[in-house]
Image (cartoon, rainbow, N blue to C red; front, top):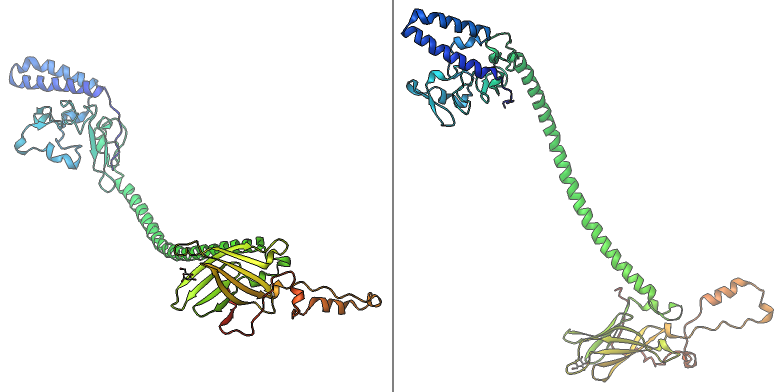
Length: 397
Ligand code: MAN
């Protein structure tokens, strides 16, 4: 990485021009009127000295001085051929490279002097980092290259590249060590992250599953809480259970407050309807249930079922009929349909006696109601004695 800054001394161009004139004059002196020209040459040289022209101009810099290694080949053409400005605009004699006079428009002919405005000077900085600086910084009195190569006229810059290089390498080594140690810890982080992500993924899936289960449960509970299960919710215990009845052709199953089905002997199940509400007559609403919207009957309506609910000592379907095509009637008995027990009249003398015995009697009433008179609030269905094929299931849905 090279540092490249912009800075240019306007005197360098003037110096270059004067130097060029001197060179030409000296050449002329040598060739022609030596004695006569000598004086004018000397005068010019005095001028040069007064203008503090860089000493190096008379030292003759190598054409490759200050050139970046990648470009060396352009500055050492074979057989001393002419130098071609890097922008290709013109060719100049190789001697004109680094002669402290700017010939090329792109400043490429003066890499080692400050003669050109936009030239670049390369310091090798052996032992440290090479650097590319603006050639205007050459011989400007400031040490820009750690090897001092940019201030060759004054030679006042010490070469401290070794010291800088040593520090640099030490820092590099330190940063490599830190980087290696960090990279090892990073490996642990990577593994930790992998395990954590796996756990997160699993937990996320589990929580999502649980959430949707909970949401479903909430929906069901809300439904249940807001549904009508009769007086004192007395029909609620039937929800979630199922009751089957078998006739010669089919098995009918009632899932109270859910649906009713018909299953043929071949195992084909037909939905007869879904819970549609209580449908008893006015004043006895809980005597009938309706299940509607079952499978479409061939050439007919969708199937539906009416459940006649009557008092009994157990929950049981006692008969199923199909009085009209695809309209089914179930007779179902259940203790839930029985009338509430009337509290026994308390003789006046016992009114303030032992309360405990009263509570016991009231809280455990016998539901063995056999007198048909007592079922006046609900439909009355005769429960056949252990009819073949009747089954009761208590499946949780
Ligand atoms: C099936 C059963 C019967 C119904 C007929 C109507 O056989 O569901 O109960 O009467 O279809 O086609």
